[in-house]
Length: 239
Image (cartoon, rainbow, N blue to C red; front, side, top):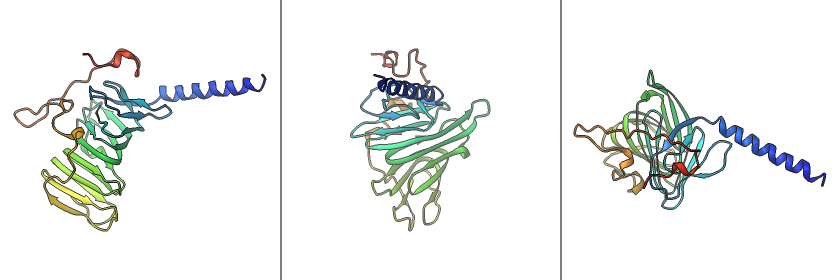
């Protein structure tokens, strides 16, 4: 009996420690995809959880979409990120001052396909990384695909992306252009047109990215604040 008591105490201490770490995790945005289809997140110090509509997401959280799962995230500055199927990424860092619209945003894309649309944060504070490339952006709507062998495909829908590859010459594709960074890190290639695969998770058909106005800009969907706990029943979308 005495040997059980220390074990129970250790379990309680561990649970309390994890809860405290989660309580101090930095909230950086929320899930904007209303229909849950399997995306999960692993926040720092927490347990894997379903990414339901309007759930908070946190700095250093790992996001995964196995099979046909997808999700859409909105950061506190209105930057948007769509995550396609069979994809993984880590939300490394987000710091933002809304008064000056300055800060830093860093994301590491592990594998899969993603669509990134800049918000209000200063563009020179954004760093997007894959296993074979590092990117900064300028007023950008860009699709990034990381192949199973770590080859990176970058297709710019709008704006400009500065690409620093693991090997070969840096590139700066603009609207309607793409870059291929092979896993071998021996060269880079810039081509015309989109080269990333079609995936429903990053298509224009999802309303979670806002509709396009007549002047070409995107209407921002205001973030809805929840009234319950991050995983509680009040996070379910209204019918």
